[in-house]
Image (cartoon, rainbow, N blue to C red; front, top):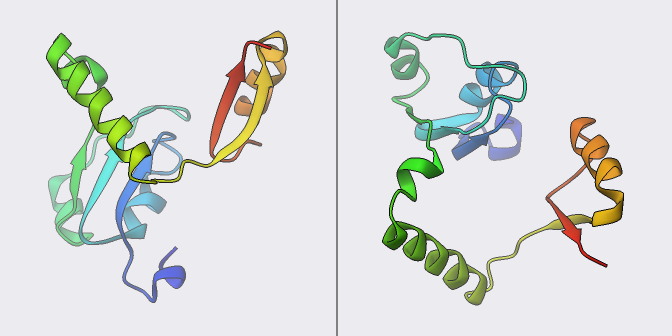
Length: 125
C-alpha cells in the first residue's frame, strides 16, 4: 500500500475484515492515521498492545457501532442528513454491481466470495 502513497501511507483505513487484514491495514496507515475496524469477516482482531499503535505512528483505532452513533432518533436524523449532504455535494459512491431481489442468493454468493467492488445494490425489479 505504501508504494501507492510514496511511502506516506493513508490517513484512514476502513477495515471490515479484521483478523486477517489487521497487520496489513495497520501498516498501510500514515503517521497519526485512523483505523476504523467495523466488521469481523475473518474473525475478531486479536488483542494488541497500545505500544503497537505508537510504533505504527501514533495510530488511532475505533470500533464504531450504529447502536452508539445512532442511539437516538435525533442521532439517526443527523446521520441521514450528513449522508444526503455528501450525496448533494457530489461525493461519488461506486456502485459496482446491482442484483434483483430475486437474485439475492447470487448476490450473497458474490459478497461471500469477495468478487464484488464498491457498493452492491439490491433492486426490487
